[in-house]
Every structure is written in structure tokens, then in C-alpha cells.
Length: 207
View 1 (cartoon, one colour):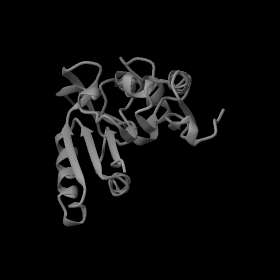
View 2 (cartoon, rainbow, N blue to C red; view 1 turned 135 degrees about the horizontal axis):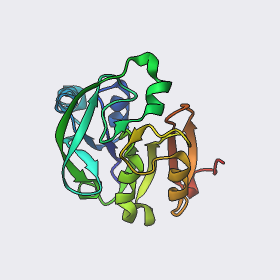
View 3 (cartoon, rainbow, N blue to C red; view 1 turned 90 degrees about the vertical axis):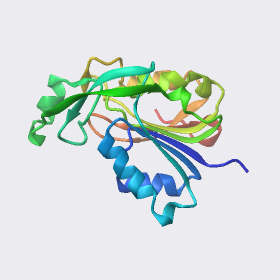
View 4 (cartoon, helix red, strand yellow; view 1 turned 60 degrees about the vertical axis):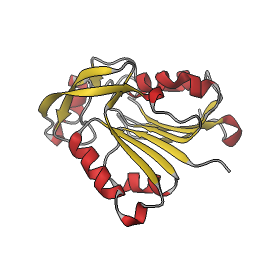
């Protein structure tokens, strides 16, 4: 029986991540911010998670190893990113009083460098860099070695972050259609929907 494994890019210490860990045997949690990683380590060092293998990696995922400037914003939802929040996003989310708190230098890794041979679940919530990161594991997708992918994207026509490559809904769907994946479900957030893909023998295609 294959071990249930998950990789979560852009992981925060929320109830959602507890649910992810509970459903898997091995988890790799990746976030560039020291405070987020500290909270994750504290949570999963508790006795109730001792039967799980949980690794926390403090880094941003990108298409190359190295260091990059990372913008830390004061609100979740439109939060810390390798890009800069666009004017369009500022206008739509003006009610949250969004502001840039700090710009720091973070370590960057290529996701493929920490991927297991087979993966049950991949979650990417990387604030505008999601599709760029997904493309770095094309070898896994092309050979069906990831069972399910949940990825955040920008609604078509609503680019949330400047300075990053295409992260549109249509771009993500077009990319995944090259491989043996179909869109199983979609969380209809007006600006940044979450798309869930599975290997095509496990779901019905959604338009």
C-alpha cells in the first residue's frame, strides 16, 4: 500500500493544514516566513501528530534556487508574495486597508528538489506565483505521479500581483490539459479561485 503523502506550498498555520496532515502519512510544508514556519513546527510537534512525518521547510518556491526579494503585506488573502499587489487588486480590496509591511530577502528552492517520487496531494497557494511553481514539476505531471493538485490562480482579467508570470485561471487549465488531469472542482472566489485537478480516471471533466 502506497504511503499517503502531501506537499503544501505557501502553508499557513490554520485549521485547514491540520486537516491536510491528518489525511496523510507524510507531509512537506513550505513557507518563506520565519513566523509561519515556527507556528507550524509548534503545532506538529504536539503528541497528537507524533504518528505523522511532517517536515517544515522555510523557503519560497520558485523556478530556480537562490535568493529573492519577498513582499510582506499586512492582510491575509492578498498577502506576502514574490510579486507586488496590483492596482486592480488594491481597488477591489480597498476595504481591507492593505499595506506593505516589509520587504525581505528569502531563500528560494525549486519544488522538484523536495518532491517525493509519488505524491498523493499537491497544494500550491503562492500568491501569484502558483502556475510558475507548478511548471517546475512537469516531469511528475507528465507521468501521472501526482494524484491530485489544488492550486490558487487569478480570475481571468484580474491579475493580482505585478512582476510575476501568467497565473490566470485559463492559463492553469490550459497547462493541466496537456497532461492526464481533469478539473474536478472549483472554489468560486471572484478574484483568486482555487482549482482542484485529479488524474482523469478519477473524475468527470468540468467546463
